[in-house]
Image (cartoon, helix red, strand yellow):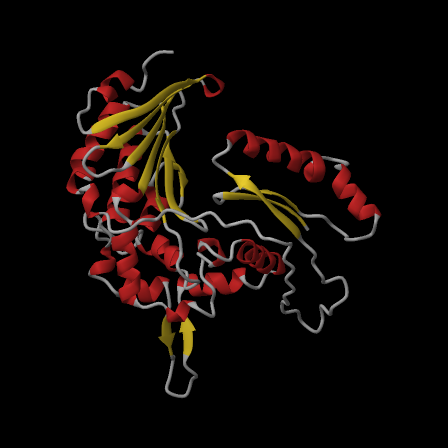
Length: 357
């Protein structure tokens, strides 16, 4: 395989230390794992012939409560930054960029910011906007960003009632109106009562108004440090050039000793006996109660760090539930236990669990 990504040049960069490298034949790629010496940032390179270049930076952001702090911060860091002080650079990128992908996502334990483009200049600009956004956001000088994206009180006139508004607040009100969403949140809370997965990282509308601006900026100081980040580069590009630029423009400004938090996630200890939980959700009078019940059985099976276990349960999910004529799904339907069967391998968090509902 040719050294399209200039990986030999990567090894010569004194700002980084190579910790692992491999050839990934299935993806026709060369992979390198590095650590930025000064800041402690971890970097994963996947160099290949793909012209669709991908960049992502992610931070482990385990929530301490259900105020939705990680989710609100995900929205807020893309509302202007030190180098790009416009009101909404994310919207400007959506309108004017040549991107093939542009988004940000909050998971139960991490927040990620991925972008992609086939145009070299556009890709460089996307990286710059996203790195400046997550590391140097305008939230410190513009408290109104928190009010806009998180929550605020609102009253159109003196005669109106005081209401609560906010982008994430309204988004999560919609998410909590779905019975499947309510069931998913209850499931993780019951399975993992002793770690961060018992909390709602997206935000529970009933708890979001308890979040303060001071807690908001403190969370960014604690978790949005390069030492708590993982950076990913994929595609056909000069990897050494990109790494040298990241070091000079951003990472060299940080020292790993200044990282203020340990974001490690504790494994949930196994239960001594199965746990049962019954909850309710809202329905309208027109919907009624007929055929509105959900039943879900869930089992924690290991961690996503075990690749063989991960793949095995992906296969089991397809074989038992997803495939046409899947035996478990068909048996449950034939037994008239349910009208439809949902579930599978839940692998978006540290501990895998298998669900059938």
